[in-house]
Image (cartoon, rainbow, N blue to C red; front, side, top):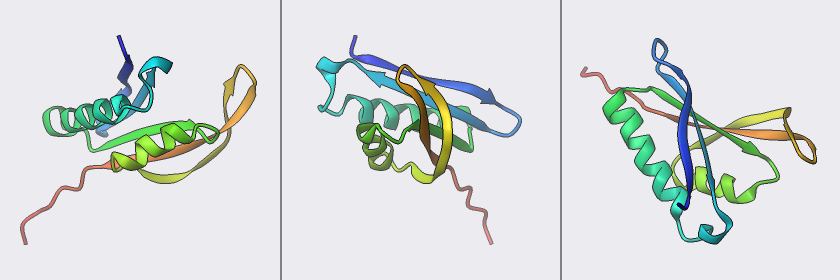
Length: 105
């Protein structure tokens, strides 16, 4: 096992889901999170039909910010004091992957 990735908070009516992942320390830095996020995103949009995937992480977690950006998740904003961690409250970055439907003109 290298880590975990999941879709949660599934809203099928609006086509929105939240992505969460973590990677074991021994597997960090070799692209595990990026590969998993790319595969899950393609499946969630292409096969399931989600329109918007949201990913949030502590602003102190630069590695997760890099994974989100590398996988095309745009930084949408900062949620102030939004999550309680072992060392107190953290601000959270919100990244999004939005599937744009192109309609014929």
